Image 1 (cartoon, one colour):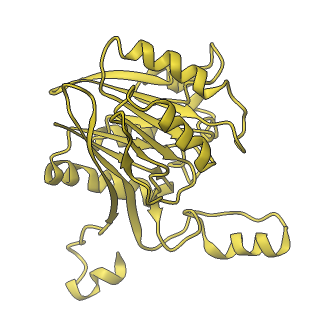
Image 2 (cartoon, helix red, strand yellow):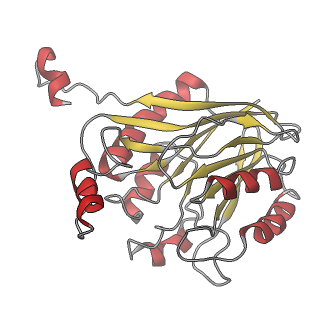
Length: 277
């Protein structure tokens, strides 16, 4: 059995710190074979940088997926072609920098990952994701039947439709983008594990990872405001998928909601550590 841990959108410094410090222990404790994380919000809540990419990979992330914020940090445009484990949505036009899929060797066989972006209420509007995925999955199944899909989309209907469309063709379809974990984990009749949205890795006392007050003020006044990444307790949200490594069919899917506990600092008295963290 192959165990894949997928982590939802990593939000800012709090989210990436929690992921970097927690993933090595989770891999060991849960006997994880392969870790995927959506990193498109890892740089101060918008985009990802080369340094953050390297830090996440060194922490044990096998593949980093993304979405509509992939180009927000300009240095990523020239970097993405040099790091195939950082994916952008596969339905960008031809000759766009980077790749939308990858196949990696593991001790339990080749694992393929595809990153696709929906079109409903999303910008920019990319190529039809269903047509692109039909071709991409068919090509990848020539190499492996262990295929994971990050479907980065706004609406539940589009993500569910993608899961149903790919049922029996891939091992898992997990949605991202809304930063809110859904409770619809299931295995479709064809053997594809599905979750409409994995949620986020970031501050739990927030609005989608951002400070609460500015966003509430924006809704009240309609005036432009900055949306800084929130502080406080951090939670890692995602999904753990168990896959038959021979058939590629999912055997189980479990929502992950893991509270991040910052490591204690030796110089701080034990009674104060919780406050400092």
